[in-house]
Length: 325
Image (cartoon, rainbow, N blue to C red; front, side, top):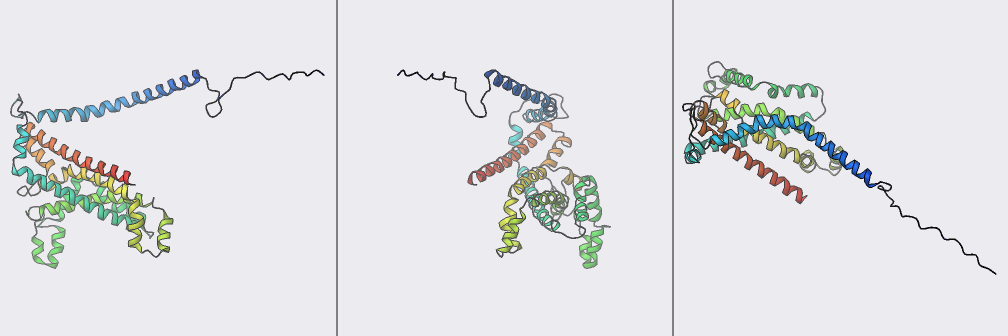
């Protein structure tokens, strides 16, 4: 009996299986080139905007930094390099530290009150009641009103001779009708801070109101089932969800208030007796009243360094919090 051998199948090339099966190296190269072209196109489209930003911000910033090492003035056409003399003169002047401390007080108190009051109004307007939409729009008026109008309105209402608020206070106590809110050395700074808080609260309120919409309702209901009151629910559920927004608002409004020039200048011009003089107003006074461009540049650079330090502390805190979580 003859055994006929069974023919064996020819060995075939093994093809990889999976998402990349069947792709040739030429196809992968073509896709890589297309991705590179798209990336290059995106960079080219961003180039005009980047050039405008560099022109409007980068060039003046470098110019101010270079001027801070000179004695440049509107009174002298030629400036001489004087090194760090401007910085030494400013940092050894007691007036700088008084202005710096006043700026920190102005910034810290304004940001704290804007956040606390804005959050309180956001919680109130997050409730369901008739006329809620109208009140949300009404509360935005202080923020959308031009700062020039805000300053003029409050200077008129708080005028010690014919102000509306002083007339109302005089009905309660005649002595209160003579309060000079913007010209009294003991009241001026607190008055300007109050006006600044009044103007900034609507914006923080809107941001927090948007953040409250992202808080899961199920967690609130679960907390209520567990017997937690409103205060406990806010501390355990709402506040943790608003933590990122709170930190972002704190950073933005710190930079905004630290650099706030227009409201203080329009209200008091830094007076009386420099009791409302903050760094932005002082920089303007040195540059355009003292005509000292080099010294003003040093003031501006010191402001920039302070803001950079505050921002670095903020981002360091954010990174540490992310690692812990």
